[in-house]
Amino acid sequence: MPGHTPQGTSECTGLLVVMPTYNERATLPGTLHRLRRAVPLAHVLVVDDASPDGTGDWADQAAAEDGSIHVLHRTAKNGLGPAYLAGFEWGFEHGFDVIVEMDADASHRPEQLPRLLDAIQDGAELAVGSRWIPGGRVHDWPLHRLLLSRGANLYVRLWLALPVHDATAGFRAYRADLLRVLMRESVASQGYCFQVDMTRRAWAAGADIREVPIDFDERTDGVSKMSSRIVREALVRVTLWGIQRRWQQLKSLLRQGRRR
Ligand SMILES: Nc1nc2c(ncn2[C@@H]2O[C@H](COP(=O)(O)OP(=O)(O)OP(=O)(O)O)[C@@H](O)[C@H]2O)c(=O)[nH]1
Ligand SMILES: [Mg+2]
Image 1 (cartoon, rainbow, N blue to C red):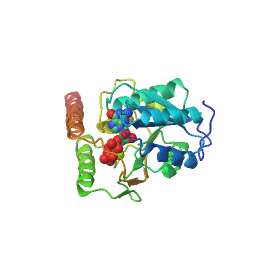
Image 2 (image 1 turned 90 degrees about the vertical axis):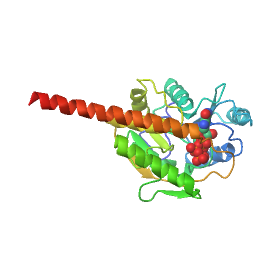
Image 3 (image 1 turned 30 degrees about the vertical axis):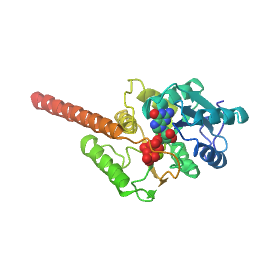
Image 4 (image 1 turned 60 degrees about the horizontal axis):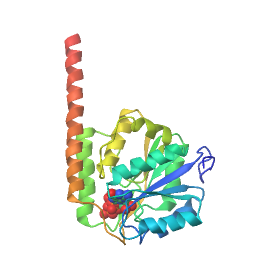
């Protein structure tokens, strides 16, 4: 499988797009079709958590017809984080060099993937498709989703001071080497704080992180998996990471004080 050169990235050998799905039968076909047109040499791994609507079965049929589509079936809906981790492991086992995260609900435009790949080719180890930098846009989002996303990013910024404006973004490209480093310590995050977790790990590892503006389209089919449980998990984890960070800062200040 490796040895494929994605469009627009002459240095990358082997590009895998990991696409987690839960009940995305309505949007997965169109997303894959657009992706195939936009970046013909990309391989795609659909990670399906036993979707009751038959998404996994459809993906199996697509994989039987197209050798660059692969499917990983999981037995139950276990959250975005575990689905991605399983997809990344599969990507490592199959020797891919660049691994992309992308939603299957048509919120991320496959036509904008080359922007992320260009940043990787340019030297970034993590390229984040950002809604909240100049040039980035969100289309047709209701006010409560706008507030949730902006509020979450503000909260992350206050506690963690990450050098990105869209730490919860789910359209990203990683160098596989960086992902391996980030996954050395186990990742427990399940919902969308998984994205914050990986960003903070990348920053702590000193990775070259770049944000690229994207257009984010509200889903027109299917049902959002965002829930109050996912928001609560993010709140708790970000707060704990923030307290940990402040504690480390305080300890190093005290150590410096003692040395003087
Ligand atoms: N395998 C798997 N995929 C999931 C799970 N939860 C969400 N997904 C997929 O992850 C992607 C993002 O989920 P969404 O429901 O769109 O969540 P979101 O983008 O934060 O929310 P909306 O903006 O409201 O759509 C979609 O492709 C989902 O099908 C899960 O538990 N397991
Ligand atoms: Mg979505």
